[in-house]
Image 1 (cartoon, one colour):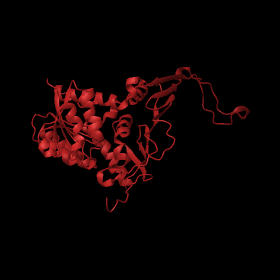
Image 2: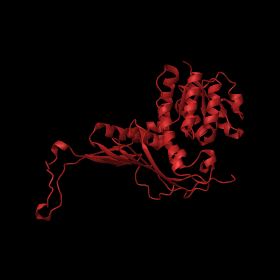
Image 3: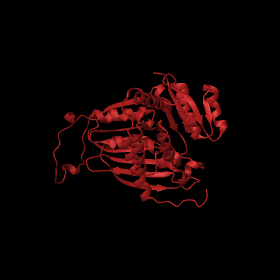
Image 4: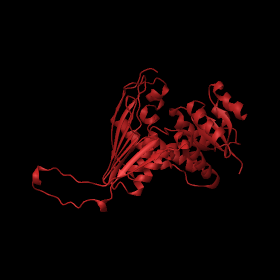
Amino acid sequence: MEKIRVGIIGQGRSGRNIHANTIINLVKDKFEVAAVCDRIPERCELSRKETGCAVYTDYRKMLKDKSLDLIVNASTSEQHVPLTKKILAAGFNVLTEKPLARRASEVDTLIKKAAESGKIFAIYQQSRFAPYFTKVREVIKSGVLGRIVMVKIAFNGFARRWDWQTLQCMNAGNLRNTGPHPLDQALQLFGDADPEVFCIMDKANSFGDAEDHVKLILHGKGHPTIDLEISSCCAYPSYTYQVYGTNGGLTGDMKHIDWKYFKPEEAPEQKLITGPLPNLAYCQEQLKWYPEKWDASPEEVGTFDYMAVRFYSRLYETIVNGAPLAVTQQEVRRQIAVIEKCHKQNPMPELETV
């Protein structure tokens, strides 16, 4: 098959630096940028110069080009739902940026529209392919850590921000901006059931009216507790992942992970003592620990490009060969449902004027 002809709506940081860059420089054997659209014409110039693609300032004109195979919706967040509806109605496959929607009911509407149109509807959740997350899943799946009791995830840092992604009216804030990445991972580790949700949000350093500090707990009987932080007021970020297991644990960041475990069959046999311990002693034993580690390869250190290539390659297989989506619509719906619950628990006043 010929290359998939792509039109990209939006040439800001996401539309240009992620999607156009990925297609032009990383997956050009499978895709080509055929058209770009942005209200600011100068933003389209880089792609036009590099590819000779068509340039639009009105997405409605782009949607008249029936030679396009896929539309990337990289518009501002509050436009993701209405523009995706229009793209599907115009008869195009669509890849929509995160956050997909504000409410789970909006995701239901988009899923229905996609089914009616017969077109592919994908959501750009590339962090499913993050190398550090792949390694965490691999270690957990191996069973060496035993039953997983808790997983702590921290996408933290210290930053002050004053752009449109600090505004509630733009579907912004840390949980919607950054949150879809770790939350997608968290729900994969939690399991198939819908979790109980407890969340605390605060506006600390943001100049807008949306939250920039999030503490989220996912829990449920028979599932590990997930402790997720997405904070812009953490001056000492120390880890990305920590895993607590009955036979060991894991800690690390996006470049380096350590884990250790003991083998139950090698552990000293112990029996419960309900009375006083002899010699005023405290419970002590010597466990033989097995330490292991992982370091990201030079290719994997460039996480954004690494994830983008794998996501787009899987999307190509879906469009051309009918392979299942790497990240399903229902998985994203569950994510949006969690985010919706978090916001209901933490209503925040909105700015009267923007």
